[in-house]
Image (cartoon, rainbow, N blue to C red; front, top):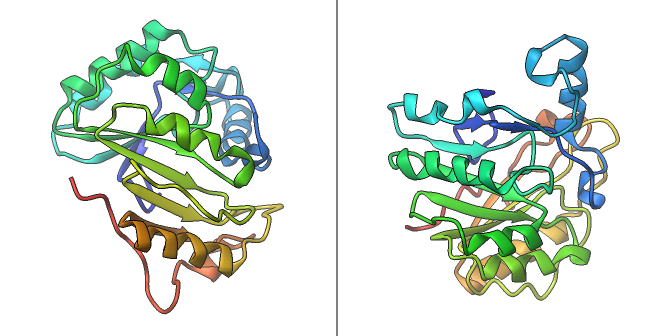
Length: 236
């Protein structure tokens, strides 16, 4: 699967892997699981296995066909570092990203322990950005793992933000994205949680991107914080 994207911080998605399993509270209302269920019901051939981890080898080299440079979110419908994704397949994904040097690839994982374990055996050219998802204080260990990964840009996706994150150590982190949960069952996000993270980014000179307030109808709540939008990207 590869499409243009409405996600504010990227331009396209590339899904050589689909499917995942839930491992923390940030996964509770997973948009990808909901979408996969719908696509399975529509008999989409990419989701014949529903949301079980599925490798799509025929999509491995797709970004090489895209000649216009773009930011590409890798595996928006999965987690590249899921235990069911073989290391050899991860290597193939990285090989394509390395070859497609005109693109910028943005990878996100909740499985920072496996990321750290494998990172020493993977190439890290400047066009591969690596991030981890951090939804609340219970999973800040993911930041410590990410800090040790030799990516040129390391970033945090704090979405859905479901609790305060105080005293963040952003040393070695270049970019922070914050967003509220959206859709059915969305949990509330407090303004002071967002401004607290924003202020920590300002104090530690880290680029800050505010994605959305979220809610059941996120188009109604928008993405304005303190009278403006925050669309900062890391300086590379």
